[in-house]
Figure 1 (cartoon, one colour):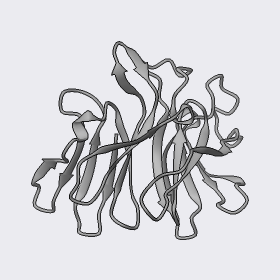
Figure 2 (cartoon, one colour):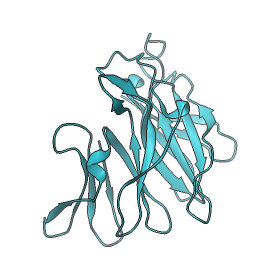
Figure 3 (cartoon, helix red, strand yellow):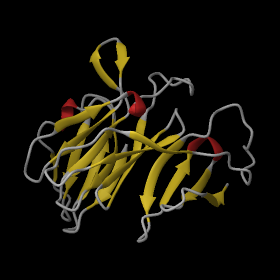
Length: 200
């Protein structure tokens, strides 16, 4: 599902599905361990650290009452702690519009100045969630909706504009991989304007 490196040089790996699902840490010597409790995350996808070292993980879809898929959400793992569910919400839940086996909601995630920014793939949105100084999280809100990518050969395709992974620059601008347009767009943090960076 996702990869992120730490300041210590460890690599964190999200395995989204299967019997070995969960979040793993691999050190520089190749030693791998499953982070405690992370195998509870049904579809671990994006990964992001906050400024205190807490690791946040998107769960694109949950499976609390199989066989019906449940809502998407966010988990977190405090430093040297156990994985715990932060929240589940309709704004983090997929619609099924892409026709996958399960709906794909919360996907890419980034942390900047006290806020988590999360792409919802099938809703085509970026959701913002406040992280308060005591570690609690606020109510998710739609920060912006992704626009068409006119530079892409796939512009106007019937599938919606679907964001996947996300990364930040030093100014807090968001770079979003647009799955259904084979493109990368930059979202300006201040005015939310969208600019195409690359289209394949």
